[in-house]
Image (cartoon, rainbow, N blue to C red):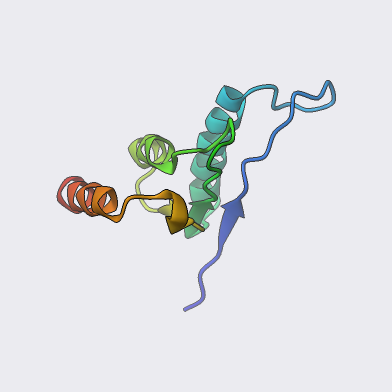
Length: 101
């Protein structure tokens, strides 16, 4: 069985032509996108991590918010550059998710 999903890069700039004027807009629109994707029958929603940027620097609060508003769609990160991460932190994060999700 084939599955379909999407990868969101979460970019935004404070441009007058953009509907995304802030990092908050980017996060809220990402949640809305995942909810709508699930409603349309998509199987996955994945988000890119942007370290040292104003948007999506930490994916886990976003993924938690999406998980609270969806039931079926698979959610996750697309790319995490481990050069900027502490592997021991990830162990505790994944352990918490495995218990609570």
